Image 1 (cartoon, rainbow, N blue to C red):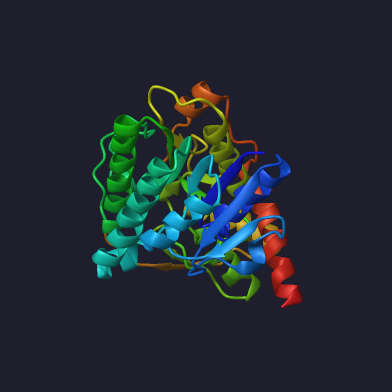
Image 2 (image 1 turned 90 degrees about the vertical axis):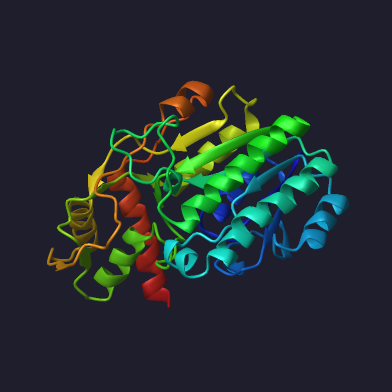
Length: 312
């Protein structure tokens, strides 16, 4: 049985990935400080360690105690706003925390290191769809720290030879996402709709994003973990399609059985107008493709949050 360490395994994407690995008979070790994760997301079959990736000695102890075959690194400071307000904390978590894991992985001969990056590394891209070869010019400390972490991972691969996978997620959505996340616009809208409030659209609603369902993201992570490293180990995880925020809200209103009466607010400064990523490289490398269309993903997500609202 292979043993995988998942940082952030009690969180949104992490918990779905944990469940997939357990179904595939992996031993799963979760490291999470529960700053945004939830202990209730952790299956009893997984080993749970409450700890912080910034704790170099604590992280190394996990590698010393368990024979870690692979790392899936999802723990992060993932909000743009706080990264602007406290860039030093963002850097400590996203860069130094990653380096701590890399050093332990190298010391204890870990075979594979899979990293959750973000489309935020690209910034404004004129030519769409965004490919892995598109220029990287992050617009926030968050995007910058993710790009710096990518560079450290690539450097450790060159120096020490363990295999890597770097996955740049588009807008991930689905059950267990919190409204506090930057990518959580779907969850925010659902919360407002179920509370009987009029959702607020920033701008004219014609801005577009690429929404990918969390179970498809977990499958992409698993593919990168399982398959041999390719020449270019950086992959977009997306749907290669774009949906306007207004269209998204119409679909959510219909799924909630609510009228479509949004409020419109001033567009946020620095917001990207249009964005979608191609997953062609991931498909060619691992045969991955998104399996859950937006309408079905919205229905599953709505069902989850309705259940939460009804059961308290």
